[in-house]
Image 1: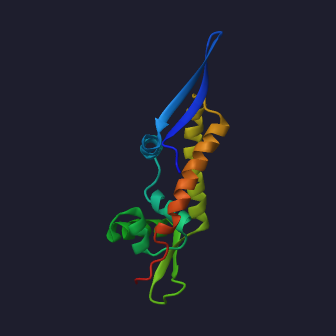
Image 2: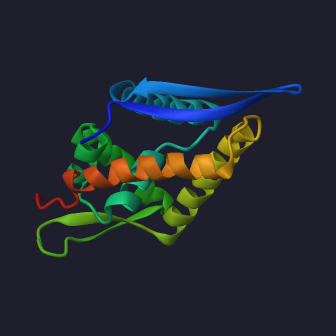
Image 3: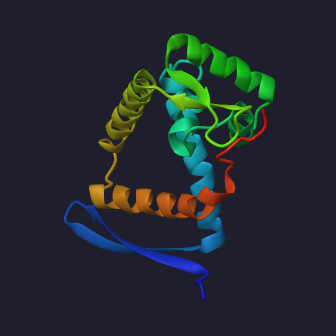
Length: 170
């Protein structure tokens, strides 16, 4: 059974005075905050860093592996024509390639190229540098950040099977 509240203790130091603060919040409120704040952090990083168009498609290909345009559009929750235009631009830049579908000779899949992986790694490093700079201005430890990452990873791992990974339509 899941506890409906979570307690967290923190020592607050004010000069020579030390106070133990216990915070209790209901799990539904914390779960909602997790989603809202993760989305806000993502939007904040995107606003501050000028990433090229198509980054989301590169990230989806990294997450899903080789995928058809229809599957990518579904995963991105955009129209197929929008994803087709995005993939075309990425193909022209050499960041992705089009290969025959492994099980359907009529279809093709989009795959990340080495330059695409390098570009995605560069973008992720820039994101990390920005977040690290922000973290350096907080009181949070590496252990706390590792816990936050572990929670997000666990929640995402539970949903990893629900995203379309293969597109068998031509």
